[in-house]
Image 1: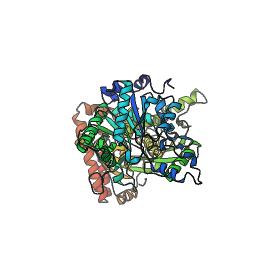
Image 2: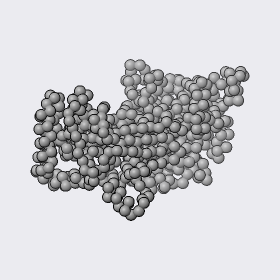
Image 3: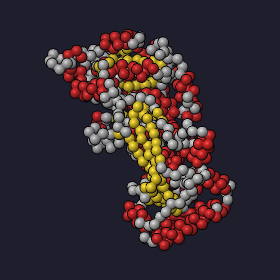
Image 4: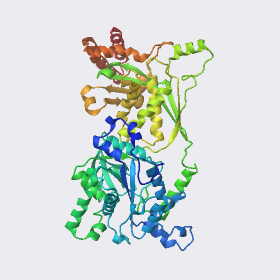
Length: 612
């Protein structure tokens, strides 16, 4: 047993090709579809004054190789050989869901951005001068956004039905950024979108936008901008950087919000200095007071953040990191991820797991399935040399293998798991980094004998994907993982219940209660991994596994029972309750170390199954 290129960079054609790839029912609302057709407007914020610019200016006359950077705005400092904003531009230029781009700069660095825009084929009119010449003369981020919106309306006319993307070009950049995945999630959910990540130990809430996100719906339930220690929001687990996609209902409130602040204060410089015009303050108001829907997409651990307070050292670290990635020193990890999932035995209660019953199962060390995954240029799923054959010595050989192994190998399980994993992460608002992998599997679990061989492969692949993308139970809770594995098999038409998937995820000796009301409320059952001493005692008993060498499809065994249950067959309904009682008694027998009572319940469970 087992232990525990569009022709114009400003304008994009209607992205019909994206709609062809998306089901209408998967989009948040009809208005979102209309906004998808028109394309989003992007406002890049680059009007701030950063510490790294100050550091460069201070040592520009000394040695250190930074004198040629003096005078450049941070957003145009080179990262891996090209301006930081160029990295963003590559994403924006190639994406048909973004139709127009505007850059807001301060007066001191305006000419730099004007030249950058000209080189990219962007009209100079799309570079907006905020008028600020020093940090103390800054207008505040939200008023800079308002400037960008006003310029967009002047040039484009009516933009009332379009989404607006706002991000800080000199503040946020991350490795393996996948803008398309973020846009897909936004159109899937509707509303407005923000990115967020798990709060890091060294981060101070008083310097960040803090938020709470509903794990099931991905909706942001609360947001507080830079709360002081002990204030509401300082305990929130997540941090949101300045990257937002605003629906019209949200961005249209910005002008009135700014006007209200100015009317109450009468001094724009004072408000800008105390952070009243910060974008986070507006988001806090939009979520808390206006009750506008914001959804959060979680960023994985591969993101790089470099803010206005970061200096020359942090900039150099960012530059070095991306240089390594560009030259393959850091971007292509050669380490191989290996995972293993053991076969399982349903000790008691089987097959009531699919009928709101109770079961007791245990994993066994004798048989297992494994997955091996490593980063690669292309995404490749490797067929197994034995279980996914494509060449044979002759018809007789093909007949023998087809009769013994069936027509379906494991490659379909790999593909279905990867497909559903992508959908799961999108639905849960997890922004996976953009990187590919090669995946292969192996197994020694006898096929089609009821030892959960299919789900063992699926779980091994799922766990490998979790590790590859640096995800944990915090991102996808343990109790939700069995349902995901079952969804993969259900998509392939494999008849099964949750029992196998639960015990293979939790491992060891697991008691499961699939009470209908509890599952309806929570989306999963009550799963309890019993203490190790119970497992160890069970392992001392003389258990044997008997199975046919030439079996039929084990999934078909449950088909008749399901039809009878759906038809309200009283015998089946009563039997499922009895199976659950057997599981409860078996647990009690194990905890009491009563092997006689355990044997009696096993006999009763087997006899009841035979009678059905």
